[in-house]
Length: 197
Image 1 (cartoon, rainbow, N blue to C red):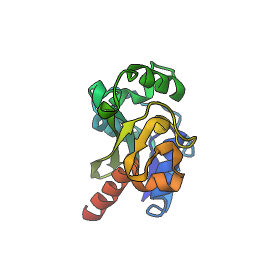
Image 2 (cartoon, rainbow, N blue to C red):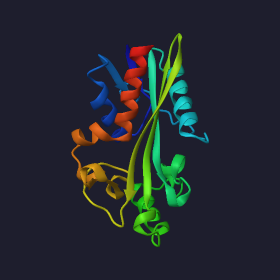
Image 3 (cartoon, rainbow, N blue to C red):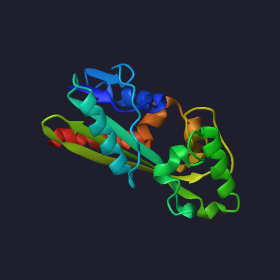
């Protein structure tokens, strides 16, 4: 299968490639395929956004058999599930990880330890020519830290504490994160769905 990754996020593409390369002989990012588009992520759910991205990219990537899109974010219990689908633009359009994390810390200032539960969510949609799409979800439970820990990862990783390993996602190596992350779990679900298909 010739697969295109429907993302312009270099960090996401790197994680997905690291996990999927053993399973797909031909795999390319949009940049590698010469596609320069931004899909408007206006869905109310991760599922809607992921499927929209996969379908729009596959429609343009005529040389590919399938397009894989991921929509993911941080859902914080004390914030009613926010930032959720707005995770990448929590601080507003055009803002970066630092601004998003600064806003997260600001709105969580007075939230006590016992109420800082959260989860990373990844929804992956695989749009396929001549076959129905596959949509899967992966989640990873954690806790919002009071300050950053670690220098790895991206996004909210320095503020996401993963209790089973006793560290933040930003303190993990890429290989270790790819074993336990929400995206890894979604990709495992995708692999299982492809086997059943």
